[in-house]
Length: 203
Image 1 (cartoon, rainbow, N blue to C red):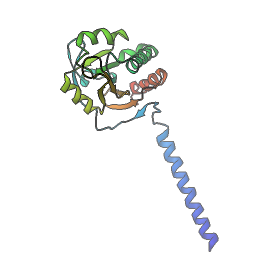
Image 2 (image 1 turned 90 degrees about the vertical axis):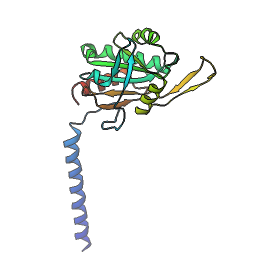
Image 3 (image 1 turned 180 degrees about the horizontal axis):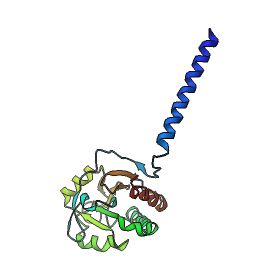
Image 4 (image 1 turned 180 degrees about the vertical axis):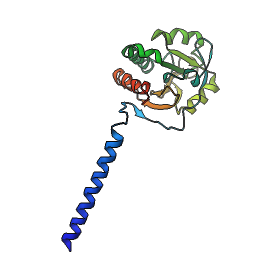
């Protein structure tokens, strides 16, 4: 009797293992292998209405057909923001001709100091195709909330010499305008370029 029970249990284990392997073969082969965190289906990051550094109203819908990367920062940021923009400039170079199908957006969380002329000078200095976006204080708060971005003045907040603590990751949208990935600040240019190629290929 014990032998029969052991045999039955062993058979069930083998069947479960075979089903798991079969499902893995069916789904794993086609699943894209992103380096960034896959957040496909997120219920946030769907709306954006700001003005670019050339004074034009912009929405996410304006960039359909392109992969869009979205980063929140400020021009007086000493390290994280210029590093992120420099990394994206390297990504554009790695993509070659495919870079024409990518739009990099930089949203300032410091509209008080980051004027339109300042953004127009700062953002394209990293790459001529990059766009800086800004809104007033209320619009900035709304879009930050929509994208679950944290930002807060710190240091000498009594004047204009403050700094800003803020979220440091980058969002990536596919050419259909869907929020797909979240890349941490330290993600390398090669990995970001690989992820963008997958999105451009419809993965």
